[in-house]
Every structure is written in C-alpha cells, then in structure tokens.
Image (tube, rainbow, N blue to C red; front, side, top):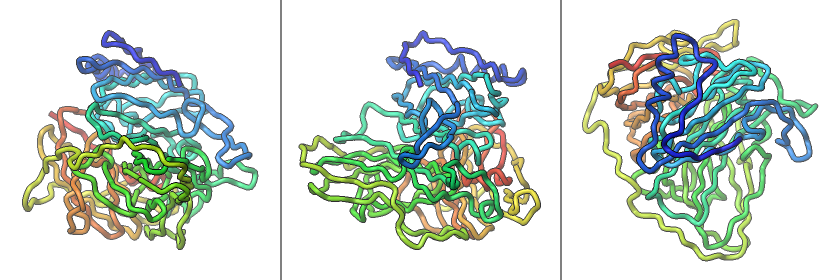
Length: 456
C-alpha cells in the first residue's frame, strides 16, 4: 500500500469499472468530496492479489490480500480528510471494497448494488470525506465467503483532534480460518456450515495465530477490536480483568462503562481502555463460551492472544468522565414504521436458505431523507444474526424489550435467536441504493439481504 497526503487541490482519478448508468452519480461523488478547511486528501494505492501468508507460524498458506498482508494495511485519517483509495485488482476474479461503518455517498459504498465489480486487471477509485471518528474497517463485498475468508479485509481508523489521551493505541483485527491438512484454506461447503456459518479452528489476531502482546506496567492503553470473522461471535475477556468500554461501532460513547467482558458479533467493533496492570502479569485475550444457536458449540474459553506485562513506565493517559454527547433520536414510547423479519427455510442450493420478509435478497420500500425510521428487526430463526445497515448509524432502543446499557451509534447489532431489536435512525441527504443484511457471510450469501432506496 502506498499512502500520499496531499492538500485541498488534489484531484481524483477515474473509475474504469463504472457502468454508464453510474457515471453521473460516481462523478458527482468524486467532485463533491472535498476536505474540510485545514484538512487534506489522503491518497492510498491498494492492490488486491494472491500471496503466501503464515497464518500459522512456519506454515505457508495461499491467501488473498490487500497491500500484500493479512489483514490489509490499516488506513488512517482525521475527521474532515478526504480518502482517495485506488483499488487495483490482481486477483483471478472480480472484487469490490465496502467501507464498513463509514457515512459516505451511495456511489462509494462498494457493493454490486452501486458499482460494477472491478474485473481482474482493472482499477476503481473510491473518494469520500470521512465525517466521524472511530474504528471502522474495509472488506470485499463480492463472493465474500471466499474472498474474506482468504484475507480481503483491513482496519480503518479515523481520529478527531479532541480525543482522550492514552499511553498507546492498538488495533486488534480478530478472525479465524479453517485450514486443510495441506495447510491451504478449506473451500466453503457443507450443510452445517451453511447453517452456522464458518468458524475456523485457527484463531487470528492481525493475521497471526495467537500472537504475544507486550505492554508496560502502570500504563493504560486504548485497544480497538474489529471482529472480521465470517461467523464467530467473540465474548471478549482480557484475563477476567475489568476494563472500560469507551467506544463502539460509531465512535466514542457518552461516558466510560466498566466491564469484564463484552460481546462482539461478527462485524462489531469495540474500543476499550485496558490497564494499568502489574509487572510480570500474564493475561489472556480470549473469547468465553457463548451459545449463538449453532451446531458447533464452544464449552471452554479459546485463546486469541497472550499479554505479557513488563517493567513499569509512567502513564500520560487522560480519560475524561464525559467522552461525547449523543442526543437520543427517540424519547418516550414510539411505534415501529417497518418490520425487518429474518427467517430461514430448507433448500436445494445452500442446504439452508435465509431470507428477509420471506424473500431472498428482499426489495424493500424506500425511505425519505429526513424522515425518522424506527425499525423492528425480528429474528424468526433459532440462531443469532448480526444485522448490518450500510451507510447509516442507528441507535438501539431495545433488545427483547430491554434498553441497552449505554447509548451509542451503531451500524451492526446482534439480533438474538427468536428475539427482536428495535432501532432508530435518520436518513440524511445521501440518496441512492443501500442495503442491510446478516453479517454472517454464509447467511448473507444464502439470501438474508435487503435492498432499499433513500429518496428525496
């Protein structure tokens, strides 16, 4: 990956893979993406290609990667910057890149809904202004059960000038992979996998199996977690020690919340303040047992990484009691204006067929800019589903009738088996085609996806 930071006069390159019908929207998005005063254009060259990668130390596996590494390079920007990312495809099949969690124009969302897939040998330039500080990520949105499993994902961090100060800031991209006896990634398939989604036996942190993390005693660090797994839920624990939750999918939450564990459904992110720890401590970053309704059960904790605490160092961390203000979208009782029903049936193509409102790849009614949306996302199946809304943040009002522990902005929420989640969101002036879907990749591929338009 090559990164270039340039001033406000930077111009975007064209998109060789845009169809004629998309040219107007694409060109408008390119031209309208200008950095805020005093901010810059961050140019990134991102190549997708096959590489040899050591998921397991000493064992080479054929992987697909952005920028020659798994996960792809962490892209960083400041609020108000413009990201201009030229994706060049050297893979043997088409691809597109979705910018997960970012509030960007529909033409830049990176799905087959809004662009023609980038063919082998072609390039596509994404250009958009980043509006929100937080922990986001990017990943393939084409043939995801293959492309993401092989490594096509990476973290994207957007910073604000007034954030809390920590002794260190680390990003942990969690994933798993299933390897065959020859060390290569197993191809997708099987009835159980179509029902559960794939959970690999090799757990990864930043593309490596169970690495070691070193930190100084007496210090407090900001840890950003991205769950990039195909289907695994992570009930995150750091040696059972308390930590402070400071942010989630849409950035900082109003005030720190102390916890000893937190659940990350697939595609969820969490930001936590960890430490201080005593010198010599050895802690496990692990996932605790969690029953999400899958055939494959986890009855004991599973290791992601080991933390070794070294000699003491002075701390400069400053975490304010109030991190940000989030005004509620809804106060008092409110009725839902849309039901999104997640269901399933048995079928011939995938073994288990998943749907939304009894339709695979559901075509939903449009929503109008500025009109409050209150949706009931209802799970009619015996497995949990992580529900992801493209391009917009929502507030979770209730999970099975109970209010969440803190107010936050989210783009992905876990919908429990046979449960209901009520969300509220406000479509701002970014018209175009959008989608929502289950972020278990196999469920998404088997039809649990909806398409809708935002209209003026």
